[in-house]
Amino acid sequence: MKKFLWLFFLIPFISSAQDSTRVDISNPYATIYTHLFFLQEDSYQPEKAAKTISGYTDKVAILKAIKLKKILDGKGLFVDFNKISSDPNYNDTIGYSASYKYVLFPQRMPEISVEKINNNWYYSAETVSKIDQIYKEIFPWYVDKLQSSMPDYGHKKLLTIEIWQWIGVLLMFLLAWILFLIAKKAAFFVLKKLQHQITKNTNLEINKVLKKLAHPLSLLVVFAFFDKVFASLQFGLEINTFVFKAINIAIVVFWIYVFLKMVQVFMQIYKVFTEGTHGRLDDQLVPILDNLFTGLVIVVGGFRLLALLGVDTTTMLAGATIGGLAFALASQDTVRNLIGTIMIFLDKPFHIEDWIEAGEVVGTVEKVGFRSTSVRAADTSVYQIPNSKLSEIVINNKGLRLFRRYHTNLGLRYDTPPELIEAFVKGVREIIIAHPETRSDSYNVEFTGFGDSALLITVNVYFKSLAWGIEQSSKHRMHIAIVKLAKELGVDFAFPSSTVMIENFPEKKGLNPKYDISLERTDAVIAKTVSDFKNEGPKEEV
Image 1 (tube, rainbow, N blue to C red):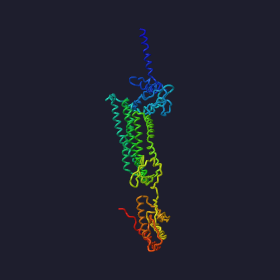
Image 2: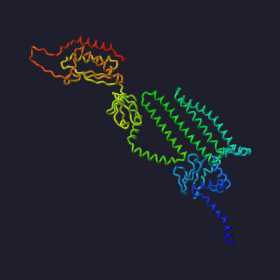
Image 3: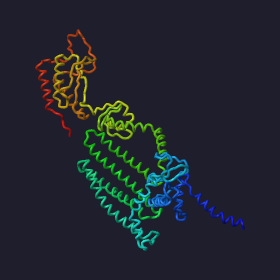
Image 4: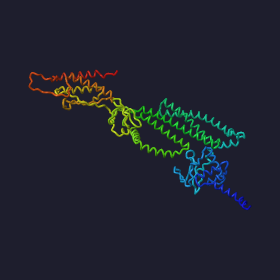
């Protein structure tokens, strides 16, 4: 009997000791668990939940603890205890100001955190000071007033949801639709004004993109409205968690869409700008920048979506960095080519359609890509030159020449009289001066030396046109005129030969031609040849 009485006497103390052990604020996990556990329906003891708030009286601490719980439920912030540290000396390495601090929701609500004070963990002073302000933003004054003044039938449940909440949802969607229509018109008006300010003209492609851009922007306004208002309907944690996660995902998706369309708008504007520039290398940069910015938007948006779905993006980034380093080491040629591409666009050693000599490759630049450059040779074959190699070798950009230089040697027979050599040189000079495609102020036609089988006449001229086809046509006209001049003067072109001289053979005559060196005749021939050259003109292609 005495043992029974002692047991009966000790039961309250044992149960009290067991309850008191549940209040644990020794680490971040224990503090957050204590706060939320003692505010559940089946374990509701707000005075114990208030132990997680330091520096306030019991009554104020209880009110703040309750409001903080409602804030978490109202915004659908579900606490995953598997991710909370239970280390009493937890040290935040992300970069927050406090030495010992744990932030519950760094992305969605960084204001809520716990910190170590002395040897215990409490909700931070910053969090506690902002609880009332955050609560008023999530639950405006009129919500409590409407709920308290609602008749009894308004609190009746239909499919586990009170009737006043159903009415609130319908009103919210109606206001959202009106807001959508207003925001769409306003967004398109602003974007169109902005487009006119940037481009100073009307571009149909840009207008189409802007119309598509106005739609998601107005939807972003609607979802921001949902994010602001939905918590005031005071649904349960499960519904709020689902709804706010869907809202946040939708916001990120629409932002990705908006940025993708913005990339298109800026690329269209940049394309209009590059079309007005002289060089075509800028035109080649448009698709490269388009792919780069599009990929960047998708990657950043993808990481944001993964963070909303609960994936630890910090770990992924660390893994991606290590994997990227390994991949870069394994593909050094690709990285070098990418750097070479950047250097080509920065230095601009050539433009599209420039005729270049790059090592053994000679041809016209057709395309500059991420990895290589396409050069089409004169025989229409295409060479793919890695940009890493192209950025290192010597490039002779003949497309930047002011004129096309042409140099050749004309060989006259050794028995040509000096008078005819002078007449021939004078005639060639007159032809060059009369030629419409050559520079008349910069040329050389001189008797420069004695070859093995000919007297050498050097011809050095500059053609005005940089086009290869026009240069060949100009050469043709000049060559024909020189051949006609030589024929009319009676001058022969030499070729490799051997001559046997027989001194005593009086009955045989030599094969050497007889030259007419009359000055009057040579001047007349030169004048007639040059006149015919001017009158003929270039032949038009059919």
